[in-house]
Image (tube, rainbow, N blue to C red; front, side, top):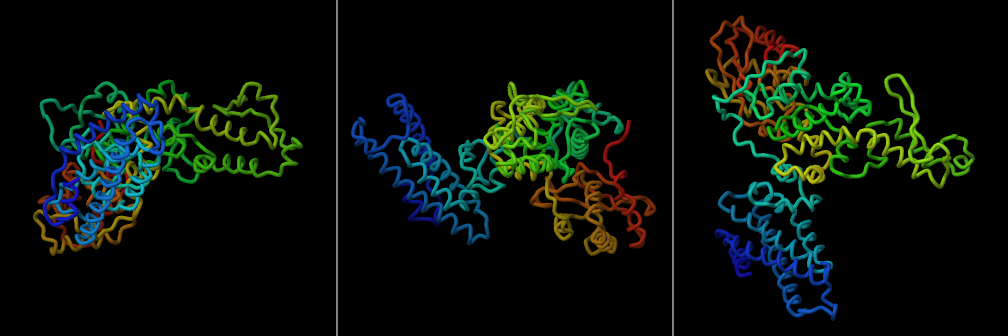
Length: 531
């Protein structure tokens, strides 16, 4: 308590270290909570209960809880004042502020002992969400702040991403390689998915030989898996970049192994922070999170199905009870040109749809169409993803800790048009100066490109087609335009591993534009060769 008072009364001096005291306090609370639960068979005690033993001691502890919560609220307020003065950042010399998250953790644990006390902690977290998110984004993997994800409503996308990424293995340095143990995979682009699947399953512990090649491989494999021609996934009718498992994927005898493979690849793409340009439909996301799929959740996956179910739920009672629709609790399934009927529940063929059972009918339709029919595929994907998690048992927790839109941003990246000014600001030059004619011409040509041409150029340069949500600042390093000493008749080349574009010394803007137009053709912007 005295340490917190020092932090409040002297906000301009170094934060008093409270880590030891807080750690001891948390250890005490764990033992206390267990003792209370063992003694009463429950948590959430009421201090007005006269039958409680040790009521005086528990009451005193509750007073301490409220006092500490009030003081931490003031400390967080001071952080927010400091953030506003420093334009949204936390001063590095005030890193001791991170211990406030430990104190909040202790208070959150303590609040579970008393009935209604948790809402007091939630109130502070809600009102001080700016300070809370700033502290989260500066927390370390070893800090153990997973508990905050139980209150994800008060966290920003950046905070949720930061905390969930700690559930995945840490990538020390994508550019450090043990050259004695490298494995070179030669993959035919025409057989990209099949060969990647075979090699990945066989050499699952090997690393790729370069980050540029690795980034492109992730993108191409993920897009190949989701390509409807491979029958593993279906695209949403109104968004061909959003996918969900295909109930008829068993046309491929290895389909479940492919889903397992894809789960691992997806998790690794997150580890390597590669935006692969695909989106998962909400129905798929919710199943991975262990959540129930509702009617509103299926709108994107099947708009016609959604519309039909809405009509049934809103239909006039008399019309529905007249059996005008002639519907029973069955579902007709078409697969490979043949049709079959499946009962939604035992005896469903003889149960007529009416106004009293229509909600149950719609819910059963949803569960069969989007859950039961793809449960094996979702299970295999989840098991593959879990193999990459630090703790395989945290699969559902990982996805529950994110909003659906968070995963979109992490897997797909930004959908905004590329900001050329931001591109310039994150580009260095080797052999050129930014005032040289060639550099001035280059950016003029880039500014005149279509959005898709700009994406292709970026991909040619870096093997990154979709930027992180932070833009170029979210990339692993700055970009570089390197002066090539090859003939000015040659096309530009790139070292994608190092975000380096090699630009010949072109004699005119028109020649540069011609060369850039050639390399921004989609089929030419590739970084790994064909066997």
